[in-house]
Length: 285
Image: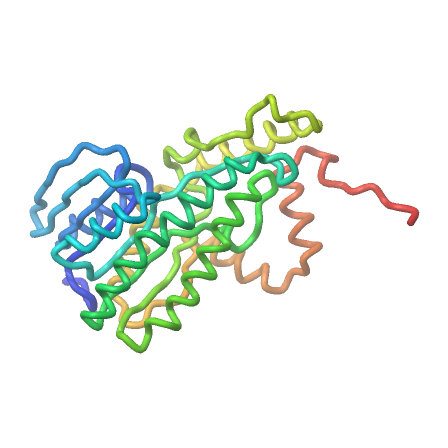
């Protein structure tokens, strides 16, 4: 059955050398789209697919604003942008170094912004287009020991909501995909707070918390699950604002709408903090 395509065949994908970005690039190209995928570290090449699609890989660091703008403006066209580039920083909110926090935001938020702005300009002028941002469930519920990562994904939620309202009059749609635990290279690439900064007793808590996250991710969903959601959104004239990946996460997001904040914190603390560490001491004041 032929897929509906309301936007066009020209797709731009960031973070295309691994994980969800790579899955998106391959899946779109395999379904007849002409994909340009970029990453900081990738072999530059072009491959054609039996269904008429193609994938061209190029090197680009999306944290370089001017280079990213020039690259996008030189593309033959951008009908769909799938912005996947990202990384993760783990550490307590109290002690995470400012340089790690800035790096987290540079890649996840500003990297997305740098790519989105020239894409949106081209889409606005052609009066059609679809912006897909890869967010995270952590952009809806903060994860302990990943405060900076969660903050960067919360920022993407707000950004995408505003874009959707601003661009609707120009025929441009925007939505955010929210994967949960996913089996990708993201797990091994996670940046940990350096041990020499741990003078406050978080060391064992952080290690156990990240070990739990890593285990869940290694046993998580395939990146092609998120890529399949992105491909399906390309066939919808009015895509939803946000799409959690997987029935379990869709149900979780629905359930959390009715759970008070204290309940959410209790569940997340039990999941990601060692036993007893999530409890707070009652004050006499």
